[in-house]
Amino acid sequence: MKQFIIAIALTGALISCKNAGENKQEADDSAVAETVEDNTADQVTTNYVPIDSDEALIAASLMAAPEASRAGCKVIGYNMAGEFVTLREGDNEFIVLADDPKKSGFNAACYHKSLEPFMARGRELRAEGKTGPEIFDIREEEAKSGKLDMGKQGSTLHIYYGESDLYNPETNEVEGAHYRYVVYLPFATAESTGLPEKPVGSNHPWIMNPGTHRAHIMISPLPDKNKN
Image (cartoon, rainbow, N blue to C red; front, top):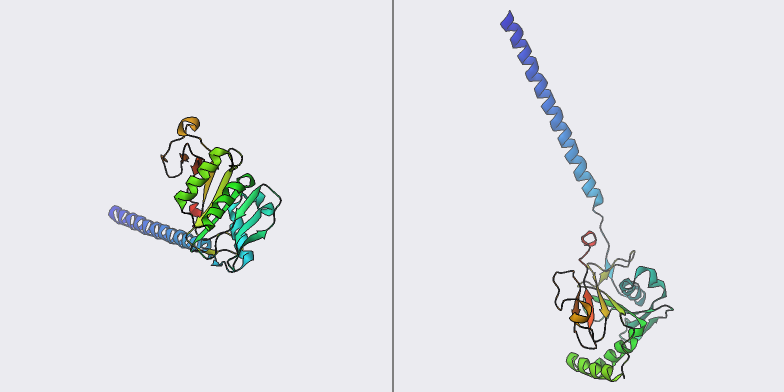
């Protein structure tokens, strides 16, 4: 009789363990299903479209400017017809140089208006057919002589660039675009700033063209992975 009672008890225990295991497996399966469902819900498709109008070109190019200043920026550059024009008048301290729609990829810039003589001189020399090194040498000489105004010390250039020429019309963001910042400090050096002449990391500031009219601090933030 005692052995019979023990056998019944063991059978009950095995059945209980089996039911507990099945319940746990059902719970695990349910959790996995919910996770998959949540991940699927989070995958929102962005409808990027070509920049095919002056309005779209202006909107996307303004992303180069600080968000709080975009409404008042002047926008210049090539329009969709290939003419270099003022695309939009502005009333604040920034000028946006729009992306050139005839070139592949996307590259817009925003700079402090005190840099306009320096920027305009570069465009003028480029239109004359001067090469990069020639433009550098001419502006170097003109800056040293005082003929070329290099703007306020510490004036900043904001660059918004990427390989794609598609944008999201809802947010104006260009597909896969990144930011880079340039702080102009004419004739500054590594010694005068304490910055290295080469980056010590992919997102570390450094000084480029030290000791020249084009001396500037380079800052390249890491890409926002949530937007790529």
